[in-house]
Image (tube, rainbow, N blue to C red; front, side, top):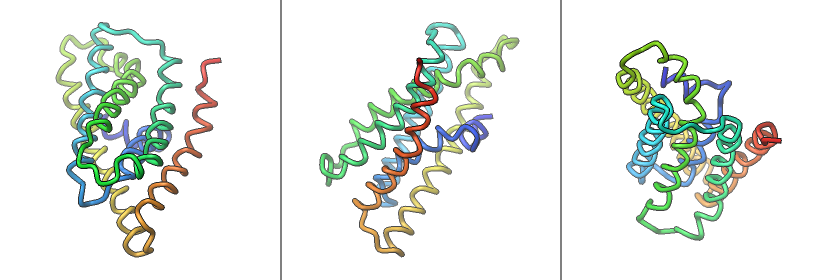
Length: 185
């Protein structure tokens, strides 16, 4: 179920977020992207768990709006990332933002997940299975973005900053209608 959740093209917000997350990185920094994807998985599942056990209850319409906001912020960060963190070895800011965004995305899926496990006494095992599927699918999406970046930068000879700006701009353009559709009028 975690695989399908991320790779569902009908619910492409996850793919869009992961793409935005991976855009500024290259194969040389694959470990950093893997750490970020794992941070996202852990916090995504944490918010699912908090929701399933009703420790935290969040307004669904607010979360549905915040999901494209997280995508937009990640893409905007990428555009300024080149100047701010060029040459930086730290992904601390990225990790903090990714953790927060993972919480938001997890709450976005929590109602559906709660329905799936509502009759179950034991909820941790389905959550672990779900998390495993999410992690596998996220690594898949990140690898596709890294391969695309490698192709564009190596074969087409597009410099990395240009690739980051253009790819992030495309993510922004796709995200703007999502913001409009989910704005809590």
